[in-house]
Every structure is written in C-alpha cells, then in structure tokens.
Image (cartoon, rainbow over all chains, first blue to last red; front, side, top):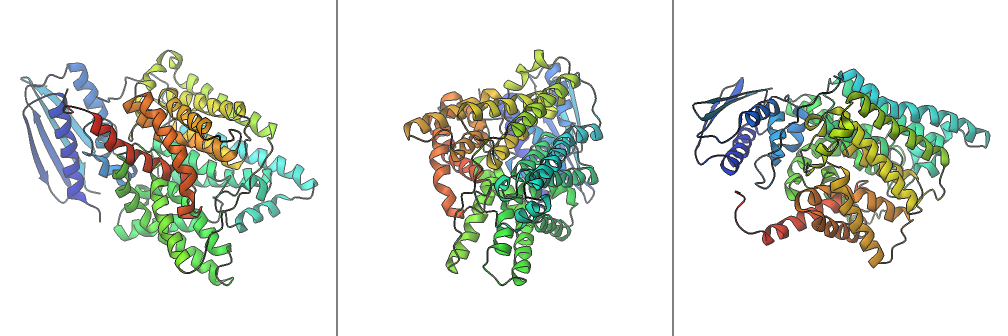
Length: 115
Length: 429
C-alpha cells in the first residue's frame, strides 16, 4: 500500500510535536486533500521563534522532495519526541513550504503533490 | 532544533558529485586489472577469479580476496560500484548523504558477499514492486541498494547444492525477486523498532528476513554451514590505496568548502539519528572531509590493533566512510568503539581477529545512541553490541551480510525504552 493519508497524518503529527514542545501552547492545523495534492496549513500562535530560526525553518523545509527517503523512512515521522531530526524527513516528504511570521503568529503552508 | 546551516561552499553539480564518487570504483578497477594481471602470471587469471566469486555460495564469512584473488575482488567491487552509479544517474537522483552511504556500503560488501550476478535478481524484484505499486523505481532504488545484504541467499540457493543444477538457477532467481519485492515495506516498518538509532536499518530488516528463510530451510533439513574463509595477510598496496583515497576525500572537502577546517565542529553537534543527512545540514565540503577523516581513523584503528585489511574489513571501513555522510562523526562514534574494546578486554577477545575488528567498526551503526544520550550510554551500547553480534549470526545462518546491523537494531531497540525509563519529567523543556 502507498499509505498517502497516513503519510500526511505523520507530517502533522511531527509538526504538532515540534511546535507544542518547542514553541507554543496553541496551534491550528487545516488539511485539504485532492487527487492532485495535499495542503497542510498551520498557524503557530504567539511564536517565540526568532527571525533567524524562522528563516532556517523555511530553508530546511524547502530542501527538496526526496521520494527515496520518504519511501524508506516515512514511518519515523512523528515517532519520537526526543529528537528533531525528522524535520529533514518532513522536508523530504513535501514539495514546497511557505513560512511567514505575521502579527506574532507563525503561518506555514506545506504542499505535497500526489505522484 | 535541527536546521540546515548556512553553507558557503563551491556549488557542486550532480555530475560532479557522481564523478567524485566514481573515483573509488575507477581506482579499484585500475588496481584490480593491474594486480589481476600480476596474479595471472602466477597462475590465477582474472576471469577465473571472477568466476570463482560468482560461483561461491558467499555466506558469512567468505572473503573474495581469497576466493577470487585480489585483482578479481577489486574488479567485482568496481563493476558493482559503476552499476550503482549508473542507476543513480539514470534515475536522476539527488546525491544526498543516504545515497552516498548506500553506494559505499554496496562497494564495500562487494569484497565479501555481493557479486555482479547475485545482486541482480534483487534489483529486479524491487523493479517489480515499483511496477506493482505504480510508483517510480527511483523511490525504491535506495532500499534495493541496501537490501543486497541478502544476496548470499541467491548464491546459496543457486550454488549451495540444495537443488539440481538448472532448477537451482530458477530457485535462486525467484528467491532474489521475492526479497526485492518484500524488502521495501519491511524495511520501512522495521525502523520503528529502533526509532532510527540503528543506522544500518536494512541490516536489522535483513536479519529478520534471513532468520525466517533460514528457519524455513532448516525445517526442510537444509542447513547452512558457516564458513570462515578470510585473508590472513596484509597487502601494502591495498592499504596505500585506501590512504590515498581517504586523503582524496579530505582534499575534495577542503576544495569544495575552504572553511571546512574552521567549520568542522559544526558536524559534531549532530546526534546522528536517522535522518541526519550531513550533505544538507553542513554541505558537501564538510561531509567529504568527515568521510575522509573517518576512513583514515578506521584504517589506523585496524592497523593499531594488528588487524588485516581483508575483504570483510574493507567492507567495514567503506561502510563507515559512507555513513559518515549520514550520521557518523568522531564524537558519536568513539564511545561505541571504546565499549567494544572494553567488552573485548573483559571477555578476552583477540583484538587482531577479523571478527573482532569488523564488530568494532560496524558497532558505529548505533553511534546515534552516544550522540543522543552521551558517551556512557554509547560505551554500554558498544559492549552490548559485541555480546550480541558474536551470537546472533547463527540465527540467520550467515545469509544476512549486515549481521552487525541486525545486532545494532536489537541493541538499540533494547536500550532505548530502558534509557527512557530512567528519564524523569516531560519531553517539554
């Protein structure tokens, strides 16, 4: 099986863990799926991340989709709350990421194309 | 949080990265041909050596330097290396740390276990899986490269004398196809057992598969007898060549990123747990430099312990070099090495034996434990690793080449919940 839905859930799981652990007490997720792509919108309220960290987050998430890493390691996403290495995994599972800070909140939109 | 560092280095195109990697099989090929010609004058022609390698059952531990001669063994490794590089180019893969690790692992294990024939059915099985799931072959090529750890099953069934000749070829091919087909979902699932703390995850998966297959064979009263064919003498040409190749990697690193020496400490901050791809976190310059440093350190360690650089040790060194692009660095590796040496002292192992040397080098498969939980946990993990690795080979009968990956997975899966039990409070700072 290709587990498309489960992979999206894993991405959400990983980012939920990351934001609640590292940054905020309040986070919203919206997930939209279609035959062509899945969009994950995240609002991380009252972010404490610095501009430099947000820039690094943007760069890391836009590393490039790497299907071979996704195929092998997707089940690691969201598995652990001790480490943060899975952010690299998330970047391998998405095509593009928009990361912006507005009015003290962090807005992220992840796009995962169906292949 | 783990972010990519700002990397100011010379931009390397995909072809340049492939060329950098191609230096290894190219040097192996040239060395193999010349050395093989010399061996030919002493009554051991290259083709005869290659034929002996291909016709061997290749179960653990079969050193191709002995079976086919040094020339043929290096040519076998070079051909497998070029074949895999061709696949990476053909499928337009981004040359990341994991692919570098896979390439060096396959290259290394071509000195004991993998040959140009027994890996092919596994690739074909992977292709059939991709077709069946309607996914591109490039998605599974990485797992398939690693899964050639089970290539001895193909050789053993084909040339082990179980079936009549002719029928045995068909059964060998079918076994390889089956492995290639099932290994992708299996490897993806098995990683949860050790949470990515065992870098040779396929070794763990292959250990499980090998155990199932060996048990099935034993139920039919077919036993896989362990072998111990190992070269016992050092060859100065091989050692010299390795030194040059590792210095070459260091040179490439320094040329790609002139601030490598100053920035090398950046790589040491990473714990190494899967996925720690150094090529994207610190860039290719520091990554190649780290690979060279780890290669030289491994070689030095082998020589200091009085070991022999034979086929299995070559595999171990090249695997360490490969995974130095994907999680390993001196800071998270030394506690494991120290742990294995301590256990070796305690249990009175012969430090110069190949079994001990490869256990020592491959123990760094669980370097992320030291990276994440500190050197004491790393030393304990190293001690446990030696204890397990010397006892679990019998379970899969030696048909899983990554026996240390199997042991590493068990150690990590065993230790992590225990470490967690000793931690207090929540994960939130």
